[in-house]
Amino acid sequence: MNPGTNGARLPSGSRSRPVSSSSVPQKLVSAPVARLEGRVRAPGDKSISHRALMFGAVTVGETTIEGLLEGEDILSSAAALRLLGADVVRLGDGAWRVRGVGVGGFREPPDVLDMGNSGTSARLLSGLIASHAFTSFMTGDASLRRRPMLRVIEPLSRMGARFVSRDGGRLPMAVTGAPTMMPIEYRLPVASAQVKSAILLAGLNTPGETTVIEPEPTRDHTERMLEGFSAAVRTRALDDGARAITIVGQPELAGNRHIVVPGDPSSAAFAVVAAAVRPGSDVTVENVGINPTRAGLYETLREMGAALSFENRRVMGGETVADLRIRGGALKGIDVPPDRAPSMIDEYPVLAVAAAVAEGTTRMQGVAELRAKESDRLASVAAGLQANGVRFEIGADYLHVQGGAVPGGGLVATHLDHRIAMSFLVLGLAAQSPVAVDDGSPINTSFPGFADMMNDLGAKITNA
Image (cartoon, rainbow, N blue to C red):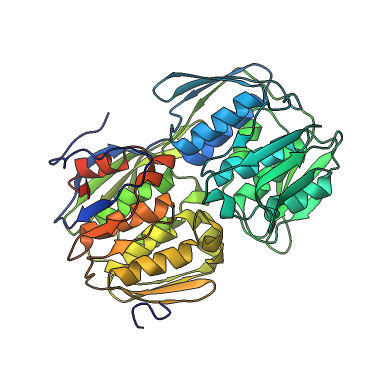
């Protein structure tokens, strides 16, 4: 392989000078450290936070939410729901109240629905508004406007909604809902929790039964939360190994619910990997959701030899959570099976960091979906590895990383992608020379306070 050819916190260590949280381009630098130590708390799960606001908005009654992630992506969902008629109010730190309008009760929004950088907001809200007989206009930032929406446009159009978008199904777009939607049975061409959720949410206000067939299990937060709001949802395994999820349309969702949002396993992944790649580290990330449809990274790290344990298991809001304790040590390269991709699709960038430090080659297969994220993450990861002297091989749906000593010293282009920024800041902690990212401001979309949390553990992440 040739580089670039194919390829309340508990402080434990000094904090570097504060990192600002501006939305303007912000170059950050991460310097090597010997070890990390301490306890931190993961921010609220982004997927569950989006759904808590959206489902609360279509109930009759009041939903209170505790531990909501207050990143920019979630605030985009909240703002859109207000424009659609729901009463969405922040009560305090992570505490929110939603007074819903009932299934089918949205009003025509008086302004454009700006989804910012949030693909989850855009795709799930497309499903919710597709069954309302008015026209909405939806846009997003430069990164979101490059992301494909055809994967939700196609099934929602079959149900009766109409879409006008830019070439390739990209934002901005207009969504005109159907007065009466048609239930469908739809087999996903690619496993995607966002597309599955968009169809199920459209099915909420559709008479009859709407069914989504997914070839491989994806995160099931939508199904779990719908059941928590008393919707009729059935899941069954099919003979070919696929899974069918059916929703019975036009229920009255039960209001007056209290939702506790667990910590986000995708956000916890950065501190976990950072500790895993620095021998002698001992870090605990508290309150992390360990839903089996989201736990692929942790299974993979264990196979690589990481000393990772789940402590204090309990159930919060229908989700299993635990405190993750990780002790740093030697890692080895492995072959990651492609069928694990749906359970860790957001974690491949930071897994590539672990692979860069591990002994031997780590082969990641079936990762083509990374090309449809906030950036072409497969290409972005490869470019970041190349900039820091890591050997790799890349293909249409695979990435092989040759591990060992990481020279570092590179500047990584984030392409407005928060996970690329955070992943390569983690790499800087284990490299021989500091690693810089050209713009860390997108981190605020999903993980406000990331740099401060990492610095509390002993990292050295600073403004350049």
